[in-house]
Length: 235
Image (tube, rainbow, N blue to C red; front, side, top):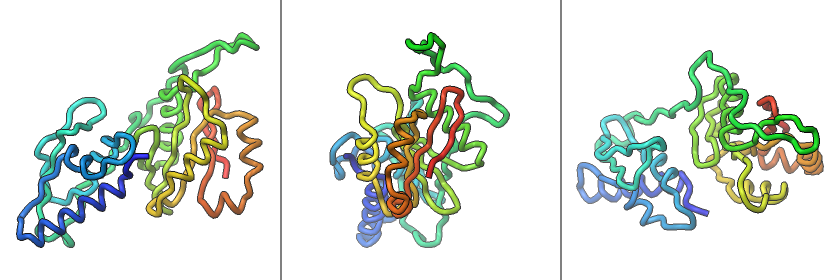
């Protein structure tokens, strides 16, 4: 498992402190340099770039901005000024991704024919799952940031991480494997965790078998989406 956003933010803040103590007026960091210092597990470029933006204060400069749809690059470089670190306001504004107000969820981002019924049904691919989730979050008027196969949602109770489970090629994960993967990802900075998955009776039954105490203690829930794009959370 690669480094988390909190790991990169902690690293950047430590580098700021060291540079300030050395008498420097600013610190320049590139995504490539930071990833080299936290070279753990899988590639974490999206996580790294997000953390770099979150550490910016008013007056800091983006020296090399990334291009492309994902808005990330190993060449991304930021200049952090070291004056008034405790008093300058954060320059980071979470980007709300999704559709403009008034737009509607695409009804058929992809269809497949059910071999048993012969009916056309939605493919539970990444596009369908993320569109359904974004519609649901928009209705709740929540601000969110899209990560790699997950969403980080800002709520009054704290940060909420929602992993997106969608159809992939190869061997499918079991329900228990998905839950274990979520538990391994838990971090003290996150108040609540959820998995967005296809609505299935088998998954709901397995969820009910887990104790309410465990669900409450760990702060986890499941979010199901059906063929009509309807989303419902199970606690």
